[in-house]
Image (cartoon, rainbow, N blue to C red; front, side):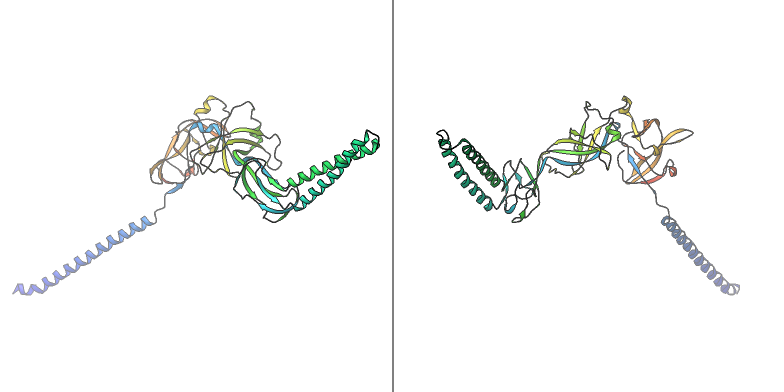
Length: 375
């Protein structure tokens, strides 16, 4: 009888415990889900790695050079024009054509000039015949010496006029004064052109010149007897340098820029179509102050810091694609010059120097790298 009385109680107790287990399980599961969500939210709002600007430390020997922008030009160039006016009859070459010396490039309508030549020829024949008859008669006294002198002068004038008419007719043909390439055409066919109006621009690109402008601070140090290594570099021809030689050095400064123009010669390059007007970088060897310059690095002065322990720099040590770890490196420094602060030891070629935001750097900091350039 007692067991029967306890059955409702046992049933209620069992139901209570089952309900408690379910509630507890749901609470635990909810807690776990909430914890996961919190972790994901914390991960989502984690600050991104700091982006730092770096430069790759180059070979010390590269500090012996100084670079300037330059412009390619032809060794010879000329704007060609007719010496007489007239109507263009034929343009015989196009832009980009290679021409030889004395090749006919264009012609004018020469009808009027031929008429003038014929007139001069007829005039000369008449005057010359009178002169020949007078020469036979002057010795016999048939004509006076003064009359003969007049006929002689007229003969010379008529001959000169005839020669001038022949030369003028020749000016109706435009010829190349030297071999080269037609760089530009300024007129269209059948146009009326005036004397000395430019028709073509002819350039001789068998060899080239490069013009650079140097500041007065550098010009004052140039020595004519110095044999410097000078090379040209083109962005579109990576990894190659082209030797240059000095041709002209201007001694009059440009009024606008206060710079002096230097003209350098360069041989034509097979396989590359280097044309006048293209941009180029000219690199010349510096005059070294002493032998230690050969083994010294020159870093931006603001990238070298100091504290109680001495002078140091921050380097970015690669730790993954586009990622790096900050390293503090003690350095020994020398003199400060226009090239930067001389660093005698502590850094090596190829290392990445942090050049901005150094106050926020500390050893072990993970950072992202910006695009590198060489010092």
